[in-house]
Image (cartoon, rainbow, N blue to C red; front, side):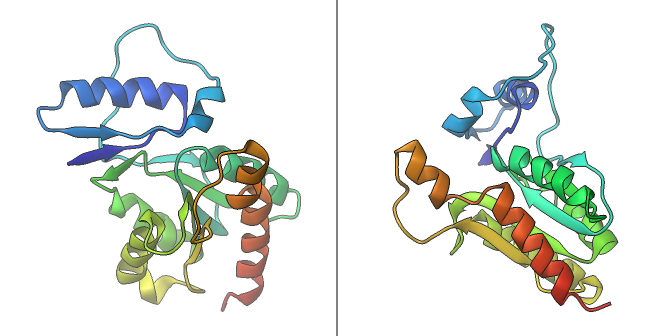
Length: 186
């Protein structure tokens, strides 16, 4: 099975049209939080390549690999941290299967520090697989262990107020980045 998970309206349309054209089954995942996201979407038909990650923001100190609504939180965290001279590279895999491990690993080798952030529980989630792939491919180039940010191992609350506390956000990404920078070997 192919699994895609867009984070923007542009990606949603492009990946959806790619999924329709694919001869194999495609799971199209979408967070309800993405329904509130606005952005430019061309009127014409276009397809995005399935299995190709997007570098949403280039950076040099820490790679943040994130999916869905947390892409926007990571971009906001990157703007905040830039004021302190910390440069985040934000990568959205867009496709979870196949996973663009080459692009993710190239960024990890470049920065030497990686945070994997997602809305699912941290234990045994997609972030664990991404962290494992990065560690296997980039161990000697990492300056610190890969950090996983996710929800606690508990049922997800439906109320928006509780959900905001349950899931990682830009403040969690900022805190994890600062801690990672402080513990990194140079």
